[in-house]
Image (cartoon, rainbow, N blue to C red; front, side):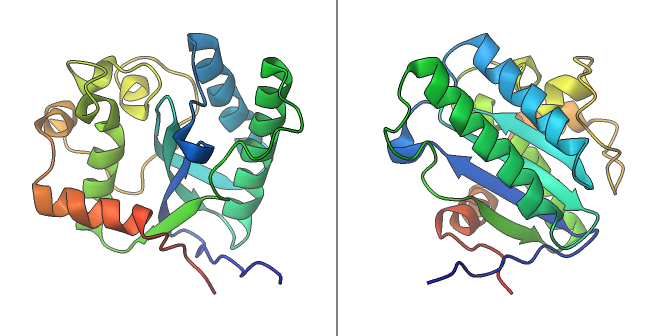
Length: 194
């Protein structure tokens, strides 16, 4: 049976998540994280997409994307995930050992300005919530670190300006009900489908 088409409206904003199969580690060393960031940048040059936010975690990643056309998200993520999977299998000597990713990816539509700011806070505070850093901007593989001077050239201009106190806002965390709403949109596999 063919896969259902995923719909990502042009100029819309999507929160995209993917996780290692069986929650296995995707990135173990700094060079693994850096290599994936390089893949993100490489694929961005080939697909009409804006990267508004990101956070790479040891066994999963979050992206906030805005496509220029309806198929851009699928094309972009196909390039990133396929190339990453091939490189990971090659580097670990595990070619032919099954899926690297749990599924294709999960994407949920960011349908309001308020929700956009919540999703951005959620994504950029991911390492802080996981206890990997004391402050969110200290996680080097996130868009917040890039905003604070770790310029990698990955980020696009945001559709809405972030508040002047953005770093402090991210470090405050989110209310439990908003955390639950965002988590349920990604864990329930609410992928955008047409």
